[in-house]
Length: 124
Image (tube, rainbow, N blue to C red; front, side, top):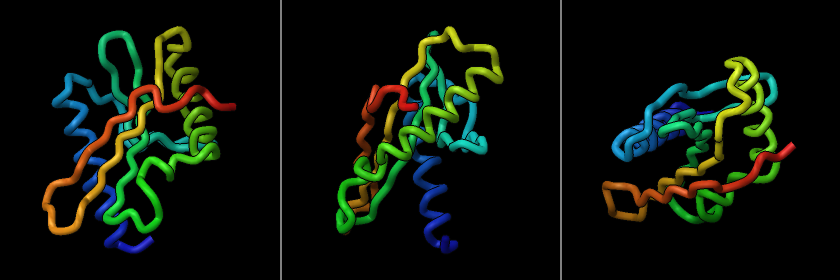
């Protein structure tokens, strides 16, 4: 992956993180990795854990950002979330999977942010 793409990805994850914080979420982890998958952001609000995937696009040439959260990505996130819950002995907590997308329309400095709560169910 090019340095430019990595920088863009990190900036978008940071923007999504700040967006969650502004909406009252407490950030627990960033870039949580397991051998089976990765989760961009793990946050909580009240008694609910939120496993969030961040997707960004500068154009819709390859489709909208949320279309990149494929069934395979959902399965990998699910496996990582189960590992997170097991490692912290929190299997009984409420949890959900969200997708936060950032789209940068041409000639605009700020992204359009879409937050899809409960974007998908646990996939095994």
